[in-house]
Length: 237
Image 1 (tube, rainbow, N blue to C red):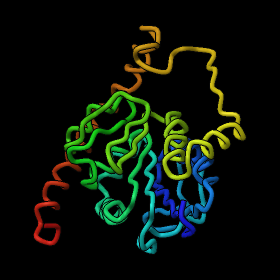
Image 2 (image 1 turned 135 degrees about the vertical axis):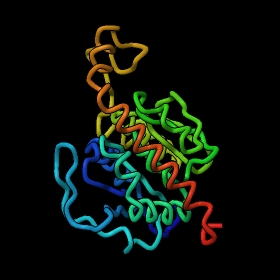
Image 3 (image 1 turned 90 degrees about the horizontal axis):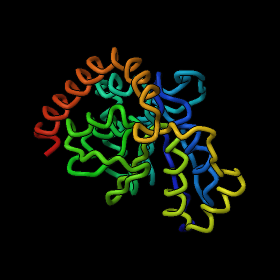
Image 4 (image 1 turned 180 degrees about the horizontal axis):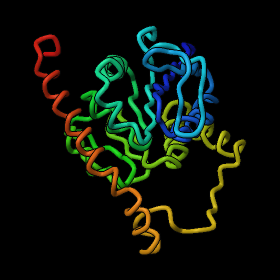
């Protein structure tokens, strides 16, 4: 890294999944020379699905960053309709060296017009929404396409963070941080993907998610229409 601080911005919002944020933050904030900014649309407190985070700064006050990271969450497609939030993500993303996300955070990047023609990851249950934004969905746990680095669902955020650390600080630094945080996953079950989960477990999850499918797709489609209207406006040409 250069002697200039490497600025990392996490853009939070109500209803995000906290591990999408806290997992990568735990790793990336340890990068040598990094400065981490926790921001949200209006600043102040942000309520995740399980925890509340205080003291975030308004996105509009962040002039630029080297790396922008967007966590996912059940509210991601609703947030994709927040034009003020999306405008700030687009502004920062267009100037960032790296544009990144975890889980359904990639849908927010898509709504900001940052994934057109790009390969991207997402939580497996919502990956099929990426093409609405011109993105190319990939099933990998971490996907890089140029300056776009995206992680799959929730816990993939740690693998994502290690990949980003290796990019910005070198593989040795990434491995040292991995060792210090003892990231050596050995799950008691092999049920972390649709391919490995027992059929009955997959069916149970899909039944639980079914009520959300129509709502989230409708929100994503509306966000895609908004994107089309905004990117065709004269001031974005």
